[in-house]
Amino acid sequence: MYDTTEIKKGLKIEVEGKPYVVLKSDFTNPGKGSAFVTARIKNLETGQVIERTWKSGVSTNVTAPDLEEKEVEYTYSDADGFNFLDQSNFETIHLTNEQVGDDKYYLMEGSKLVVLYYKGRPISIEHPHFIFIKVAETDPGLKGDTASGATKRAVMETGLQVKVPLFIKEGELLKIDTRTGEYIERANAK
View 1 (spheres, rainbow, N blue to C red):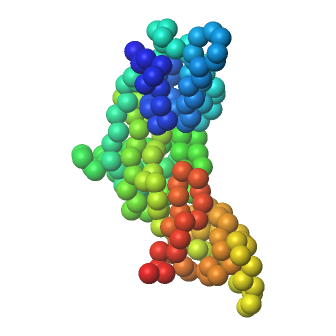
View 2: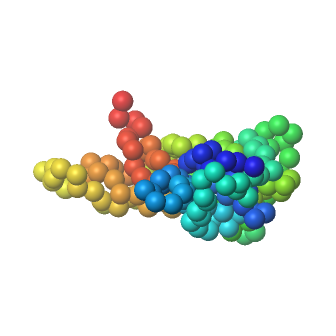
View 3: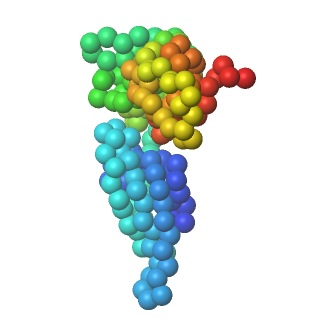
């Protein structure tokens, strides 16, 4: 069992028989009463985000989940979902459209990522924090339009829509943060 002081952002926990990841954790010590920890946690199976509060110094019902991570390569998608190749034994792993969810916008054929297993069955995928994707469609920037901080919409080759600076053109390779879905920089600008 985890103590309340161990509940930090990024920790994978099991609460009431379900696997969660801690998105945010706040320790509060009011002048009166006992201290407590409030955490926003995301269900790794369903994606549902909830908030939980635990009293400090009291035993929590939070344990380490039975999780396993396997490095995989994305191969293809079909009507039933997405298929990955396990890099250790070369077996095909299938995840449904619901299990992958909006993470599908970061999947490109041949990309390496991690499939998360809970009690021996695959439940979700975890991308690297940054990936490189090509711009498939965007409006041309207007000559002389150099307004500081101005952005436009760009559609990436995977269907992901991102706000980008006005100077970005179709066909450019961009670095995208998979945690926020935001543009970071041009990959070919160096």
